Length: 210
Image (cartoon, rainbow, N blue to C red):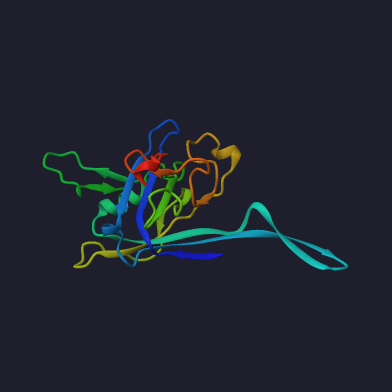
């Protein structure tokens, strides 16, 4: 199954360095996403085949995939945008430093032993006051998949491979992230909820405000 989602109202990137941390949240709203921005994902389950005298049948193997991937295009005009998507933006602290002053570091002496944090990526659709059109990939390792030019006369369109990871109980059950691979649709089946874009936490929606 390959799907493209282009009607995006918001992209939210949230991550934790430690399971007990609050979410660090970065949001891109409609005016920042751009008309050509989209998320592409492929969730293709691995199939089990059974042969008999009557023929061969196939059924999906739960939690197992032949392909589990996602990517997106977004607009970026500063290194701040790049760094926040990767969870690696370090803001400058010198006097007079603006929002775009800081740096993104790649590699280092211990880069083979230290992973970047997982990034939880949530795409919210247009015309939805809850979470019914949300698409979430819970544990991603974003990276750039093509050349980008920043600082040119036009805002760059940046291709990003999300590299979502499959939930593993022994590795992920206590990391503070949701315990599933991906989600399409409502966060809760019993209560209408909406993502709080400041805290990164889903909260109940007052039906009287709908």
